[in-house]
Image 1 (cartoon, rainbow, N blue to C red):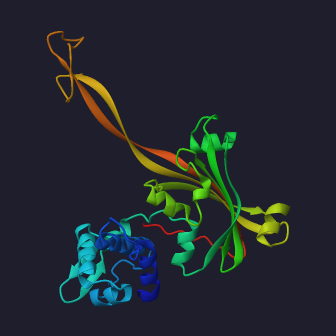
Image 2: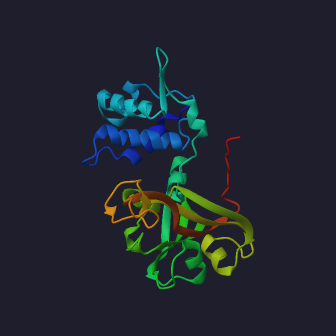
Image 3: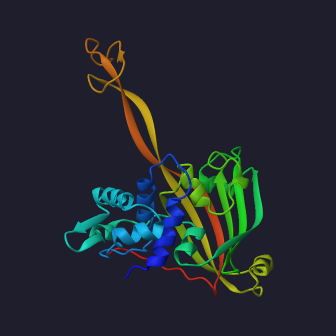
Length: 288
């Protein structure tokens, strides 16, 4: 069952329909609906609210809604059934959920979030950060350290480190890091997380407002972005590009330069977070 109010609020926040933009309104709406589906606000085989309802709730035209839905149908995310409505396609059950940040996670669940900044700085990386981000010791990093609040209660202490090349100015982050990364086309596409139970030391316990030695969930995460790399090679009589004088194997046969594209995952974020054990739960969902 779709929770209409939460769906509309999420779409409105993601699509940002009221802000002037060069991106057409229907494409922003399409993105908002798609993100809501990825977040689980509309489940597989659930019906999308009617075109008229969406248009009225969002203050936009039905034509805009119709065009956004058409794009999602073309992408295979939605399916239209004659006389029944528009539904989330069953193929979505096999699509991995997009990586979301803390702010997005809590907003999806209907909670109010805030953050108390403890540090926003740049500096040289530690050996652990060099290894996690696969960078050289002389490569600077940006650090974000904040106390996360949910419904005015301290829930999480989060240390985030990113290469300076990804985030040159750490003070640019005011609320959601992942929203900023997406705006700059650097949102992570994959992450590796390690979770463990720990006891909070004096400083961490004090900031989280619990007794020293309280149990917490410790999360360590490396997030990656997929990048494409072009490199050149040569081959006798194949490929395209500039022609080399001759092949060393067959002097009478010219060689051609060929360009190849390779995709690689690069780490762009290293997170260490301490969640209060009495206020936070971790839920894992897998397709079997």
